[in-house]
Length: 129
Image (cartoon, rainbow, N blue to C red; front, side):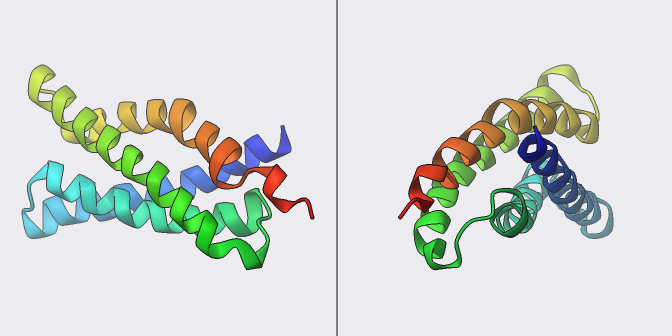
């Protein structure tokens, strides 16, 4: 349960980074929301990887390359799910992109990210010597 709660804290920090970047790009630079969403997801993903590795899952420092490559695979799915989800909800419901992003972020975070990071990216079996 502690790992799950720490992962949720990490997710909140990464999500705040993602939303801040996305909203800033849309409002300050006039970037298209789906494109800005992708940049935000990338930013949040980088923050999330390092917090999860060092604090949530306590990954060993000598496994950076393997963790990063697995995280990248999971993150590509995250990027696709987030961007497609935000685009589809916004386009087909005419909701504001921020409302769509909140819904998608919650669903992807709970049902995709946590599970794959715990069982694939930072799996405990890897740390047993």
